[in-house]
Length: 382
Ligand code: NZQ
Ligand code: ZN
Image (tube, rainbow, N blue to C red; front, top):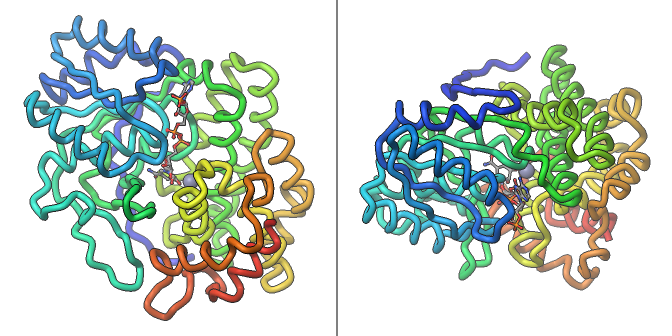
């Protein structure tokens, strides 16, 4: 087992109907809440309940409903201005990773003292100039889409439309004070979003499983347990979106997949680094980018480093069947489905190199991936 330092201060309130506690919990954290979410109605029912619960608890609130997927830093800046003008002392994020990450970046942006908000972002792994935020307004997060684990981690992923880049902010102050995980809020998720979230959550532990330490019994059982739980429950919710038990299983599995429990002593995200470029250049949504990357990555590496891949095939399913499972869930598994061709591969490699290659000129993974190898993997994903 590798050595590690672990800390996770998030208070988690889990269970059907727990949204009812938002007023009481918000009141403990602040008096003026900026509520950050989408504007197109997908979570309107949840927001309507939140307004009245905050009101009943005596917490003043203002809505900032400008979140779009892969939250752009320019939108975050507007949220920061509104939070300052309102005098917010609490930020509540309601939605999937994009809404929660936007809430985190806004909460940190209000107190940021290092200039341009993009300075918060780890935008180059080979030349790290990021100045992560040191403080943030208290955060209360309400996930409505099980996927990213943002509700219980210290990460916020943001994009820059002008730079065509996507990367992460990573700082202690981004941990929420409280997260309310109410699986009932996920009943309205369309099948595609449900499946993309589930595939993303699988990828978070799979990246560690195939790249991480060779021997750590509990860690590997935990990672495989998250994957098995999702694979068992995703088809159930796709068939019956209001299956309370299966929705709850998916929600907790996604949180546990990226709250640090599945990765102590290991931190690997190479497939995500490529996925971010597929998103920023081709608009491929996050879950789909991983649906495409995982099978190609696994197929390429299986012969090079057989042990974890063979174990995956023994305990989960053969890689080809895993690809078919992703496809049957409605998530793309090939670049060509998204209109990406072989001619696009050099540009994708260059995009990954710009943000994610380290000072040694490789993408951090185990084994490290060169530009040539990445091009081969991408060819396998066509
Ligand atoms: O567009 P609409 O129609 O409003 O649909 C929303 C939203 O745009 C819909 N949705 C969410 N909850 C719903 C719902 N529709 C109906 N009922 C509900 N209950 O889902 C659409 C997608 O939401 P989004 O927040 O973008 O999805 P997701 O949770 O997959 O988040 C993706 C973002 O999180 C980042 C990704 O890079 C991406 O920007 N990530 C964040 C991480 C973190 N903070 O640790 C790690 C992840 O690996 C990931 O990178
Ligand atoms: Zn992810």
